[in-house]
Image (cartoon, rainbow, N blue to C red; front, side):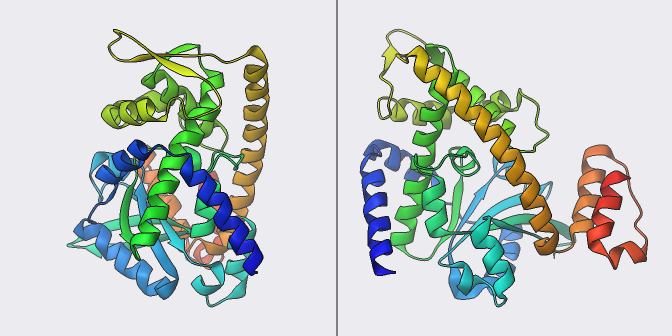
Length: 325
């Protein structure tokens, strides 16, 4: 209703006012990208599927870091105006609203090669909420605090909201991580520990050292946003003079550290439950799921698994059989 919309706008105006302008400008300098030709093939199909509901398109993950869109799975987030406008069927719209995002697999041919994407559908309003300090779980702010590219935005107003959401993710991430690291720390220690915690709050296979690896992929980005995000949260942080790389000192009470350990434990349990529910939901939305699993198995293990036609006719059963094999 109109009152709810006005309250939501006031809430996000307050959140946006807390973001340092320098952080906004730092993200703006690097976030707007033009899609490569292979990725554009995927975007054209996605836009054809979801039409006028599309507000923006975000690109993140391993393919963005490596710069190779054909050797891996392109991770995209499709931001829409509403779930009802996104689907012709009410069931996926309802599932998307109850447990966002809905995730789809898509592959297309490009100059004799296959380009693949796993794209998630999320409303612009849920993106704003999920990247704010008011959102408990790290599913969204843990992802979008990392380097992200905006490949499409419907207009400048949407672009500003997307940039603010990315900046807000950085602030939320740093505030939630600071109580879980030593009082004196570097940007690498902050992000390495925070990414380890956020990945640990989901059903993921990454090893603990993955966080440090992600930092080393784009150290300049993480160093800059760390510097700009300090002194904007609940804990006073000071940069230590004469340190290279820069070191920081945070004053955080023992009570706040104990509370942070508890909240991260709760995030871990909550996240694993939500991951299972999203997997179950994904069985109804993940097109060509068996082909996706076969590709993942071969990519990571080199093993080719054959799937008989009868299992392809029953994908709900077939996906579990393939995963077991």
